[in-house]
Image (cartoon, rainbow, N blue to C red; front, side, top):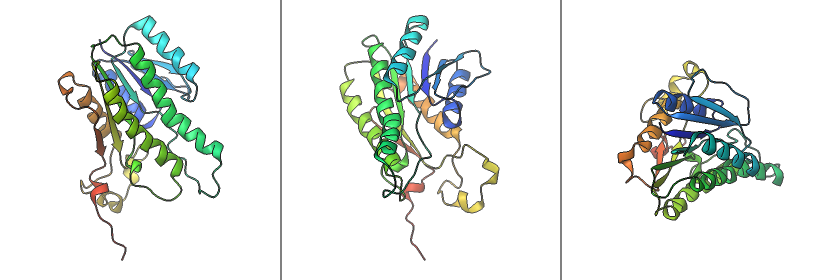
Length: 236
C-alpha cells in the first residue's frame, strides 16, 4: 500500500485530497493544526503546525517508523485567506504567512526526502496558486509565499534528480470550497471552461501526477483555473 502525507487536510481542498487518496487505496496521513477526524479507516490524523520544524519532524518520524516509507507528499497546508494593505501589514504578519506556506513546505520536502530509499518511487506535489504570477492589491504575503513555492519546486526537481522522486506544483485558480450552489452565472462565465472550480479538480490532477508511469512530468507547474488567467479583461 502506498502512503501519502497531506498537509492542511482538515478542510477544503486538503480534506478532499485526503479522502480522495484514501478512496484510491492510499494509506493517508493527514496533517493540520486544527483537530480533525475522518470516517475512512485508512486516514490517520496528526496535529501539526507547519510553522514548527519540531512538530513536522516528529510527525514524519512517527509515520516512517510505525508504518514505513512514505511515497507521496502533498504540501497543501497554508494561510490562504490573509490579505492586508501594504501600509498596514506588520512584518510579523508577513513572516507568519511565509513561515507557514513556504518555510513549512520546504521543511516537509526535506523530511520527506530524508526518509526515502534512494531510487524508490516518490512524488512531491506542492500546492501553489495562480496568485504566484497574477494578483490583486494587498495580497503581497500570500503571493510571495506561493511564488516561492513554484521556485522551490523548480529547484527541488533538479536537486532530487538522482532519486526516484518527482517534484511538481499545482496552481489552483478559483476553487470553491464552500457553497457552490450560491455562485452566480457571472461567477461561472468568468472562466473559459464555463464554471468555477471544485476541489475534485485539484484531486484529479494530483492523482494523475502520482501515477508511476507519469515520472516524465517533473518540475512542472500545472495551472488549474478553467482558463481564467488566459482571459484578457478590458474595463468598459
